[in-house]
Every structure is written in C-alpha cells, then in structure tokens.
Image (cartoon, rainbow, N blue to C red):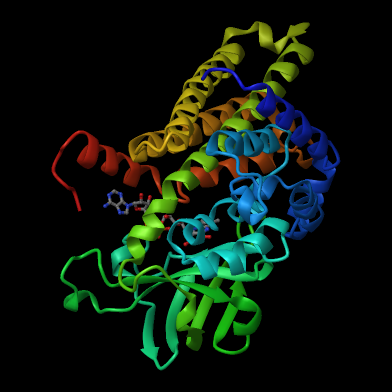
Length: 386
Ligand SMILES: Cc1cc2nc3c(=O)[nH]c(=O)nc-3n(C[C@H](O)[C@H](O)[C@H](O)COP(=O)(O)OP(=O)(O)OC[C@H]3O[C@@H](n4cnc5c(N)ncnc54)[C@H](O)[C@@H]3O)c2cc1C
C-alpha cells in the first residue's frame, strides 16, 4: 500500500514526460491571459489519462481511484495544473453509477475518447452556498421535457464542456417526505442549450479556473436526460463527491511536493551572509514541517483511494484526505514563499501562481469547516451543528 505498483510507477513516468512539454512559461502565459490550456487538455485526452476511471467496456482504461490519484498528483508535482480537465475524469461517475444502460452506451464511449466533454457540474447556487438542500433552481416536467429555471454559480469549465451534470429541484422542499428528497440530476447538452434558455457568464477570479455563472431561463431538457430516479438526485451527487475529494487531495499532494522541491533547492543554493539560507533552522523548519504534513496527508489519500477501490465506504477518509492535503499544500506553499523571500513574488518563479492556485482547495469543492462538521457529527457522534 505504501509504494506504487510497477504499472502505476510506469504511468507516473508517462504523465511526467507529457508534462515536460508544458513548462512554467506555458502556464504563466495562460494565467496572464486567463486562457484555457486547451493544448494540455488535448494532450492528456489523447494519451487516455482522462478516461482512466471509465471501464474498458466503454472505451476507458478501467483503472481504479489509486491510479487516478497518481495521474493527478504527478501533473501537479510537475508544475502543471489539472483543474482545467480533472472533472472529465470523475463527473462521468454519475452516469456510470446511476445512469441507465442507454445513457451509458450513448455517452461513456464518447467521453472516453474526448469527443464529448463532460466537465461541468452545476450544484452551487449564489443564494444557498454550501446548503445544497436550499438550492432554488427548479425543473418542472412538461410532456417529454423538463423546463429548467434558476441560476448556478462557480460552474467551472462550462464554456469548455459539451455536457453539464445539473442538480435541480423537482419537488418543493415543503412537499417532500424526506428532507433529502426532491432534487434530481439532469444531463444538460450545453451545445444545444446555449442561446436557447442557457446563458454562461465567465467570472474572473484570482486563479485561471474558467469558472462561470450559469442562468437557466425556461431551458427545455428531454426527460430522457434525467439520471436515475426523479427526486433522488442528492444521493447520486453525494455518491460522486468522495471520489472527487480524493482526487483533489492528490492534486494538493502534488502541489505540496512541487513547493517542497523548490524550497529545498533554493535554500541550498541561495547564499546570504556568506552561507546557504537553508543552514538556518528558521528556514529549514517550515520546509521540514510541511514535508511531514504532506507525507501524512499522502497516506490518508492512499488509504481513502484503496478503500474506494475495495468497495468500502470511505466518506470520512475522503474528507480527511481532502482537508489534510489542502492544509499540507498550503503549508508547503507558505514555506516556499518565505524561503524565496522577494523572488517569490516574481512571476517567473511560478511560486506565486501555484500559491494562489493551491489556496482554492481549502474552500472548494467543500470548505474545511464543513469537513470538520461532517467528522464531528458522523464519525464522533457529536450533535449536528446546523
Ligand atoms: C474557483 C471555484 C470553482 C468552483 N467550481 C465549482 C463547480 O464546478 N461546481 C459547483 O457546483 N461548485 C463549484 N464551486 C463552489 C464551491 O464548491 C463552493 O464555493 C464551496 O463549496 C463553498 O461554498 P460557498 O462558496 O457557497 O460558501 P458558503 O456556503 O457561503 O460558506 C462561506 C463560509 O462559511 C462557512 N460555513 C458555512 N456554513 C457553515 C456551518 N454550518 N458551519 C461552519 N462554517 C460554515 C464555510 O465553511 C465557508 O468558509 C467552485 C468554487 C470556486 C471558488
């Protein structure tokens, strides 16, 4: 469990080789322009890495979450950023787990080749935030369609995706038997929808993340695009979140290792007062501490992924992995900033960009407080706080 299998080690080498074609200068330019890294996404798609989790019968590699975490970790450790396309790996899980045979046959093979991009995931709304049950977007059945009205926010990659997995309310909250019922999942074909009831507005953010606001105005979606049973959508979305958290955690581990490598290298080379700055314990200790945090978090990522692959329930481990890894990457980023002194602020070092990028993961896809609340309530049996 503590070391890679030969197959995974080989795959890491292949990912690393691919990433070598996308150096810091590539990412700096994209960041400056807030441009989508299409060439990088194409390269990953053609190499098949984004289809890692799709079963072979649908044209994917049929690998497990352990292998997928290795791919994303390696991308981030190489200085690249998978956020432009990581969702292509896991959003399809909603179709795979909860879609019907026809939907699986129709979509999964095309998602595996990249012919169809399923990268957008519309859950968060401006009014309800983390309180998913409070979302206001509605889907009302009308003949063979559902009619969607409402708004989502932070729908990342919507402009670079053909399909969106959307969570909308099909039964008002005051009419459901169980609080968690009444939400449904739809697969929205955005190629047809944009301009016909769907409007996408980009949000400029502190990182290059292609995130957007999405407005639904009487958008008609065929009833055939309902995933699973009407009213049970929250469960389907929650089922996918554990895998997502572990994959994001792996990206954080990669970021942390990138920072630590930079920090130790610079601390050995940079001389001030006629000796390497790394000779000072005040410089060494934050690097060493964040290294220890990273190794501990990486173990939790491995554990969560192994449990997922073994079919065990692992919500607590997925949450802990995401929290610990995002904190470790932040600690490593902070150590890297401080170690580089003023040069950390120079764009050419890539540190300030990586530092901005890794900060996201203490907030999205779920914020640290909500993870702590989950552990308190569901693992430690403490009273629900909200
Ligand atoms: C760049 C970016 C990309 C994103 N991509 C997507 C995407 O593709 N699809 C999507 O659906 N969403 C996406 N999100 C949304 C993301 O999942 C949310 O921002 C995140 O879950 C936090 O929700 P919120 O922003 O509404 O914060 P809020 O729910 O408003 O919370 C604000 C703060 O209050 C704290 N808080 C709230 N309630 C409690 C409580 N009961 N106890 C303790 N603390 C509490 C939170 O921890 C947080 O720190 C993205 C966000 C960003 C910034």
